[in-house]
Length: 80
Image (cartoon, rainbow, N blue to C red; front, side, top):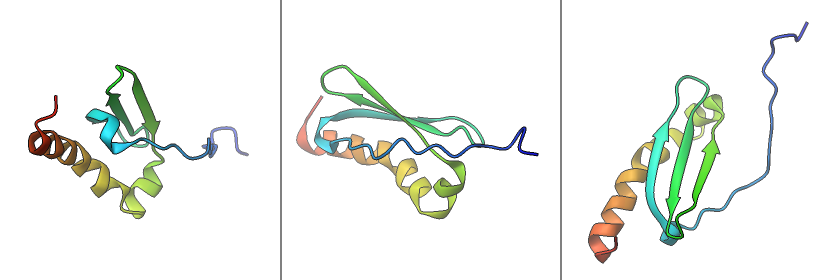
């Protein structure tokens, strides 16, 4: 009857500039996955992810490796 069915919500596209990111934290469980980006200006950007597309489209591997990529970039450039 649709009383407990999940509703798909698309809020559009989000762009996060890689050179502005200071830290990345992945979190959440099951279908409540999210990623927090700590930006240079002190703000944070939170992205909530659809767990099904996360598993199928390669987003999972990318987001799991993203904190390491940001840390490696900081180490290579001497950025803090």
